[in-house]
Amino acid sequence: MRSSTILVLAAIVIALSGCANLSADEIAKKMQEKYESIEDFRSVVSITFYHNNTTTTLEYEYLYKKPNKVKMVSLNEDATFVSNGKKMWSYDRKSNRVFVFEVGEYTPKAPDYGTIVEEMLENYNVELVGSEKVSGRDCYVIRLTPKNDSMGGEMEMWVDMEYWFPLKIVQEMPAGKMITEYRNVRFNIGIDDSEFEFEIPEGAEVVTEKDLGIEKPESIEEAQKMVNFTLLVPEYTANLELRSITVVNGKAVTMMYGDGGGF
View 1 (cartoon, one colour):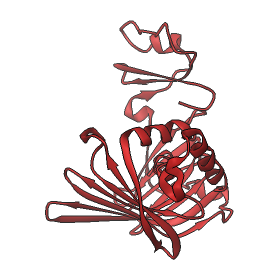
View 2: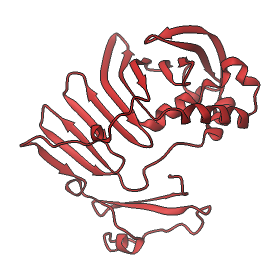
View 3: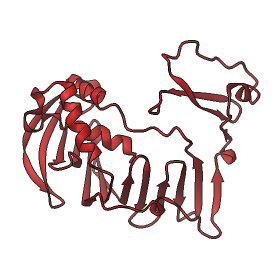
């Protein structure tokens, strides 16, 4: 689960303690203050899918450290995902294969909280329905009801009273239901950066972006030389700067634009 998804979910705590009466700017300020108090956390995350008569549960040890370091290890140790913010490793134990990708300098950072709050207010009806403990921590229970069908189904969240972090999420979907729960959560424990490095096992097959036909040229001119068609470069970019270029098998080109904060 990416760190940006967690932050979006955390943004939905706008109904807590009468917060629905605050302006978006005031809500965003409170959220920012709470988010800034989290430097890292460690937990076990359980994701359960209910579809027809089938139940599937995935469990991971999950570590996160600002601004963009993530580690997920499946509890059966079949799969490991690690990112130090510049490089990502995805290891499959059964095949003894590890995929290695360069994330680059412009990894997406934290989203715009004010924008998130405004979107939530616009798209969901938010209701505070009670309080319960999750993983031994006091939580508010909130219900989010979509204002239109395009936003998906109803959600309930158990939001940590201290850190405004969603420790449990129950989401109704057309295909079934998904429950995400964080257990044994410990915030601000000083996780060492070494946790977000991955040592490739001896004998493992290493697959890189180049092996998959993915190249990242430094300029549009360099990218143009890699393809046999003329690249279309946008004339208007809303003052955003070109952050990265990706060429796939010489057939597709992606140009990512963003401001100083990321994509």
